Image 1: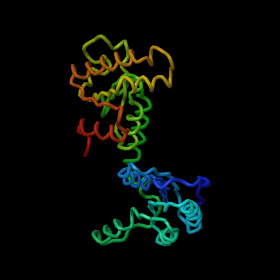
Image 2: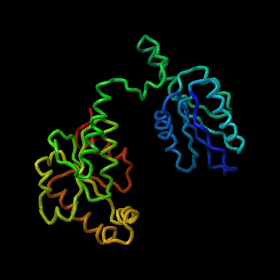
Image 3: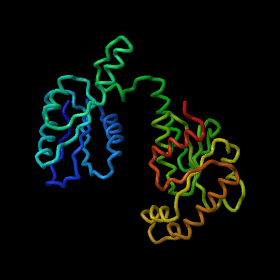
Image 4: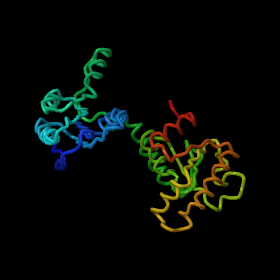
Length: 283
């Protein structure tokens, strides 16, 4: 399969910049996820990242090698994170002059020895359909999340795994979609607006499902910055309005014993992990 055109190399970089390649015979998601987790341990180094999926032929590997060698000519040895099963393609990559980290090889051999069988050579199994039941459960969860985004529908809240509540622009939608797509959870989210206050209780539409509710908050400054991008110089984005809404929301969470977290410094992955742990949804 042909791989996408690769970007032209950039100008010579400083000694604290390295090119990092995530090379895969499938989508590249596994290589990028695992490789990025390793690179995160070196915050002082600036990495120029390139994800190259569907490298499933020797010819495709040669094109990748050409790009890697051009990056090497800038003076810093590139790093390649590879999730490819073909020994031939790995040999090609190892001839590139880069540091090649095989993210599958050693672990596959260990599993083969333990299980007494050889790994399948079929490509793309890490992100294929795999378990058809699980796949359709994730698709159903995504449809549910779309229908119930931002309080658009109150239908079938009784089957929701989680109901995320928060003022506008605190991160409800991306967290909802991540939980649905990654874990197949049925997640609704509901925006807290001026109409929901000054009541001491949760909004009537979600009050009966308080045990499913999880709240998000952030810092007033961060919320003001995010809202300003959407509606600049408005009451909605003013620091005073953001401070008021967050204070009311946090008071609401505490009165109703709704667990909540501050999203200002957390990624969607971190937020999702905290939510699943707090709601005891980890298997």
